[in-house]
Every structure is written in C-alpha cells, then in structure tokens.
Length: 142
Ligand SMILES: Nc1ncnc2c1ncn2[C@@H]1O[C@H](COP(=O)(O)OP(=O)(O)O)[C@@H](O)[C@H]1O
Ligand SMILES: [Mg+2]
Image (cartoon, rainbow, N blue to C red; front, side, top):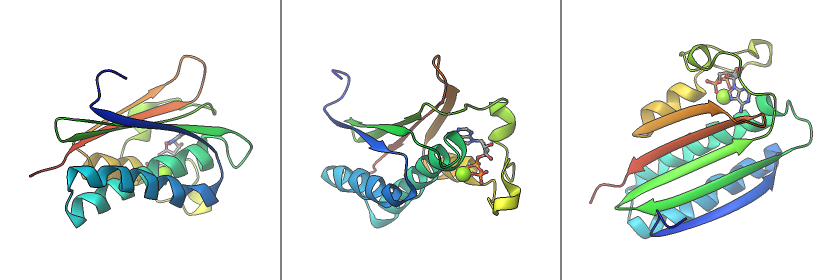
C-alpha cells in the first residue's frame, strides 16, 4: 500500500445491516482531508450503492464477504470495494442508467450512474476468481 499516504482495509460480512457501518467508516476516514458536507455526502452515496450491489446482486442475500480498501493520496480518496459473488455478464450494459436485473425487487438501476456522477472516476471489472470490483476516486477540493 505504498502508493497511499494513509489507508485502511476491512473485510465485512455481506449483510444489509453492515451497509451503514461501511458507509460511516469510509466517511470518518475521509474527515482528515477536510471534505465539505456535500463531498462527504457524495462519497457516502457512492459507497452505499457499491456495498448494496455486492450484497443484493453479487451474493443475492446469501453468505459472503465484502473487501473494502480506502486510500488517500494528494487530497484524493481512492475506494475499492470487491465481492466474490456471481460477477457481471455485460459490464457496459450494467453501467447504463436504469439497467437492472432485479426490476421486480424495485431496484432503480441507477447505482452505477450515481457512483459515476458523484465520484471523479469509476472503474468496474470482474475479478479473476469471480465477483466484481468497483474502484472509484474523488478529489477533495481545498
Ligand atoms: N457486485 C455485483 N455483482 C453482480 N452483479 C452486479 C453487481 N453490481 C451490479 N451488478 C449488476 O449491475 C446492474 C446495475 O447495477 P445498479 O446500477 O446498481 O442498479 P440496481 O442495483 O438498481 O440494479 C444490477 O442490476 C446487477 O445486474
Ligand atoms: Mg445498485
């Protein structure tokens, strides 16, 4: 983790009850960069969407774990969230606004769109051993 000035890593059970915990942990860690209220709120929303996707889509509510890495460098926050679930067939399609494979469960299909608009960068890929990784970053303005 030498590329970061500071970082933390956590692995957590893929349960919906843990989503708020991850969101708050990431937000608390970011405080050292003096983010504005709106920057923190953007980051929380993006993390919330990514973690929820792991639980709801990656594992479909079954047992699993989520790996979270948050790193800071040059006033930019880097967030990596991975699961070892089913993966995504067509990532380009999945990233389109309103695309969802769980329309019956009232998913809006806006998760990736929100992550993309609230963060500066968003990368989504399937892991070699299965599951999905989402990498995003955001510069905290002075
Ligand atoms: N971690 C993941 N594992 C497997 N599939 C995923 C994951 N994240 C997203 N997806 C797929 O991408 C689609 C779009 O995700 P998203 O934009 O968050 O919309 P929604 O969650 O409302 O369906 C999901 O419906 C699902 O098919
Ligand atoms: Mg979603």
